[in-house]
Image 1 (tube, helix red, strand yellow):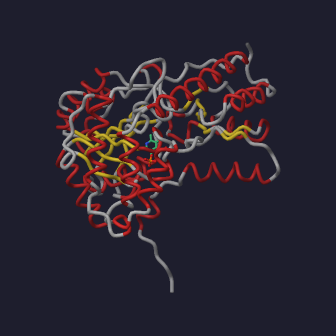
Image 2 (cartoon, rainbow, N blue to C red):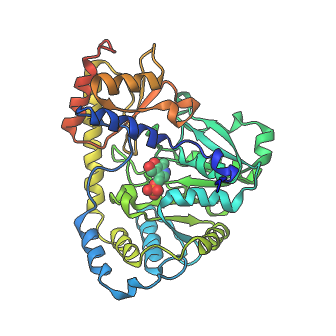
Length: 391
Ligand SMILES: Cc1ncc(COP(=O)(O)O)c(C=O)c1O
């Protein structure tokens, strides 16, 4: 029998990170010691008190049955508690919080509940490639919002085409930003809310790195800004804050109607996450946040080590404000893909080429602060040998 996939399958973008992993694995299989700074997978383990809670909860037969549809109230209350404690934001656990299988899933689902084929989604360029996936699944059209250094890597709404705005149903924003590592100011979100109201565009704030910011500056949650709940939602994940990427827990918070739509769609996909995972996630969000402060201090110290080393070899770049990435302009004479290949083949250092995040990512590479300070320094030392920079 001939299997004929749906045409949607052909529209799915090639998973950028899977291609990258294949390249690294090839070089490793040749016996090379590769320093992989190309991916966004947290390198440290989940704090022990969360793992212990999981072990305890996994033994409770209550969780061996189906969990409640739309997730456990304990986890929704924990998310509400976390938003109140960290950002002084009030959320109704029952109506303004939806539990997600990691935020990646929610980013696709939000497109499914809002967009019809041909509708437009505004996406940051450069941006996290998974926004493209959701838009492709629904047969939508992406309109890039260029993020340039001249505009502090924030979109300039004045540059967008009126015809595109007419067709736009939603927009993705992501600060602290992957890949550019900048934070967004409060005023930017005020402007965003005005823009969203005027053009009736749902704002989807991806707050995956909401807990990771440096130099004593706390990121702004979109939910802190008056009017945010009227025009949109925020996606939060435990993957980065608590090194729980493998656990697949996230939440979408904000606008009640959107929460209801996502919950309705999820009722058709699945029941909910394993109850023990939800209880352990609730513990993570309500217990002491010392582990988060320690993690942020670790990333900050790695950032400092990396930028000091880069500065010493003459690679000039503005230090990251948040997230766990470094966004570095590349030397002239290379495309970002050529430079990434050169660094992998000759220095055995894997970085992500900026072009993988969109056309405006060209001219940059992204490095993850997801290795020890020693390995980060070693990576820079290896790069120095290629003599790409003059001091
Ligand atoms: C900007 C951004 N959003 C969302 C995610 C997805 O996180 P998760 O699906 O683990 O919640 C990531 C992961 O790398 C990310 O970088």
